[in-house]
Length: 145
Image 1 (cartoon, one colour):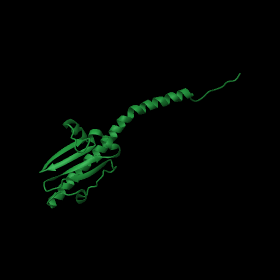
Image 2 (cartoon, rainbow, N blue to C red):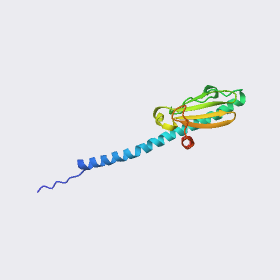
Image 3 (cartoon, rainbow, N blue to C red):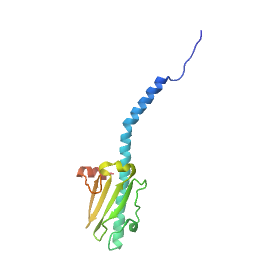
Image 4 (spheres, rainbow, N blue to C red):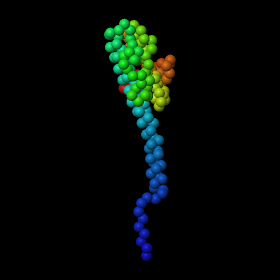
């Protein structure tokens, strides 16, 4: 009599494991992507805070606020997910904008982060485009680190 010993996995068992892995990945990836966007957004918020500090240091020695080059702040975050710009530069204030690029452009309501200083008052805004503002709850979520 032949005694055949089988070792290993059957094709069906391997396919079941692959199907389970695919389901787990499909469930977990959106959560991972959202956390990655939030981390990149936190980098942009930190960069805007550094820009605000650099602007105040520049203004202490000059009659107006400065450009990105003047204050020595890079125009992109370290991973280039956000591009920074400064506009409406004057004696009493400026408007700084961080615009999401690449995968961060899919960040919906938090694609644009605005920091505006006028006469010593700072306002923080956000929106899906440069001209649209979010409601206060969404704006707070966009600026939370």
